[in-house]
Length: 183
Image 1 (cartoon, rainbow, N blue to C red):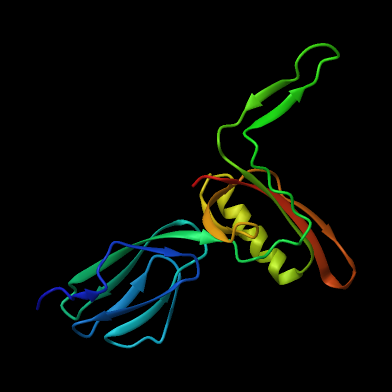
Image 2 (image 1 turned 135 degrees about the vertical axis):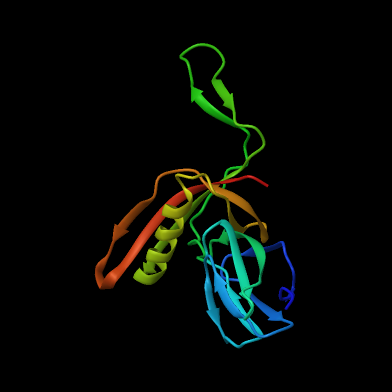
């Protein structure tokens, strides 16, 4: 018996929460290193990518214990939409200090832009999802996709600041953090 043929073959690139349909040319048992399965059948499966940046595999094993694996690189996505009171910063210099006499001293940040993400009165479920995304990416410096509401263009960003939150009545929460564009 030959190893199963999986379609599509890898490597693949996906966004967090994307769904990919896989098929096999023979009956197989499906396994995964992350994400979730749905519509499981002997020759097909729907795999939903986790919303955590990383590399994952979907493997098909036939009755002869021969396997074929597909590698999928996932970049997480921020699905929450910020409130309207945001002020993105595209300037490539930051004021370090302004002396009493002389020229203000600045530091160049390069051509990267920042985006202060502010969300007011979000539902608890949205807050928990965004906080989990932040926690899974900030310390490791993993990139996420975010669509800048001003430009309407999706690009890759890093979490660039601490995460602030403020709880309100009725289980609502406001939260904020700063993103820095990497592409």
